[in-house]
Every structure is written in C-alpha cells, then in structure tokens.
Image 1: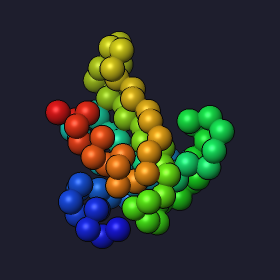
Image 2 (image 1 turned 30 degrees about the vertical axis):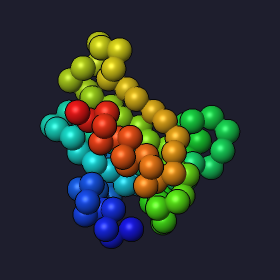
Image 3 (image 1 turned 30 degrees about the horizontal axis):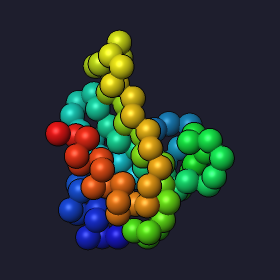
Length: 92
C-alpha cells in the first residue's frame, strides 16, 4: 500500500461529518476520493481507507470549478491498483 500511496501521491482526507477517504488532490478544486466498495449502488462505500491493492473500491472525482460542466463528476468501481491507473489516465 505504501508504494501505491507514494506512486500516486495519495493521502488520507476527511471530507467532513466523520467521512474519511484515500484521496488525490488534482488541483485547487478537483479531488479524487477512494473508499472500499461494499456492494449495491456505486454510492455504497465503506467509511474507511482501502487496505490492499486488490480491494474493490469506489473512485469518485469532483471538480467544483467545473460545476456546470458534464465532466465535473466521474465515478467508477475497480480494484484499487487498477483504478489508480484509470484515474491517472482520466487526469490527463
């Protein structure tokens, strides 16, 4: 996990209300939030940090500067290691 955290510049992030995420801050208004997926809807995630690279996770991106644009929110489910690669491609 430490290797992935360092490689993708990830950090623990508290979004308020006791919600914790693994996060990548893209810029001043854009952030990826990553949490373990618990099944059901894409919004169903555990309020904890991922623990291993093969864990299925929910990846969610918001860019508050582009709130009126169609691409201001992106969400998908993938194993942590695979999702981080997808996330990097989407950042470009």
